[in-house]
Length: 302
Ligand code: C5P
Image 1 (cartoon, rainbow, N blue to C red):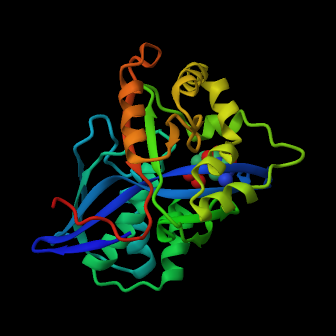
Image 2 (cartoon, rainbow, N blue to C red; image 1 turned 180 degrees about the vertical axis):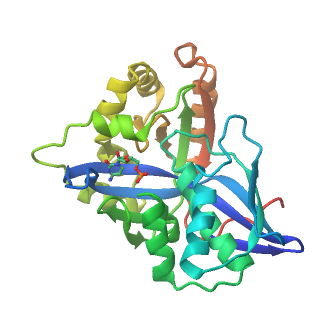
């Protein structure tokens, strides 16, 4: 995740993620699930700008109707956590240009929280150690630490133990956003932990080799069945995509976003066109994106 100095403060590009593999290894005494997941960042991204305020207040504004911008927002929580950890009293105006749908399994809230840790550390000249940022990230949510391991990582524990991976190529991905969101907590409440978990070795090897066909055969998400129990329409949409996507379809995270891999930009664009007019996907939005190959984001607004 990168920041950019601007005249008025700091800007950060906050990418979405997709889970190419997600398996549950057990339920923990703290109520969370032990998991193993292959996560990769996407070109789909939110943009955050941070500018100083001299009254010590932290104020968030967003261009996304219905998004909470009060103390419940993970960006505001990240700001408060940073101020507590460093005894800081600075204020900031934070503007969020939201492009990642919410409750979508793309870690939109988590990437914004990671961006807030990066952007405000810079704005307030706090110079936190990487371990401090990772500790704060893990406290804010299970997916937040991943954004300090971009472009890709093998994630374990609750998701917060991240082993960075180096992709050999960018993958073309078509995202389908259903008109409903999924609550992560309700999906996890409906999940069945398998007696013998799938190992993700095949998915990981295919991903590292840039073998799209091999990867498409080893895509897996244990949360998919649980999400389809909570929101049965997801299955209908997934099956509609599977009938036309050459490399199949999976759900990302706890849903609701569904995704299909493509072998090239051209194939992704053609698939996106087919899906955006598909009668069984009425109400869904479709976008062709790519996976990230390094942790440098494009400069925002250029
Ligand atoms: O950590 P985060 O706030 O993103 O988690 C949201 C909810 O998802 C948790 O309250 C928990 O119910 C569930 N969860 C889980 N196991 C994980 C991650 C999340 O059970 N590894």
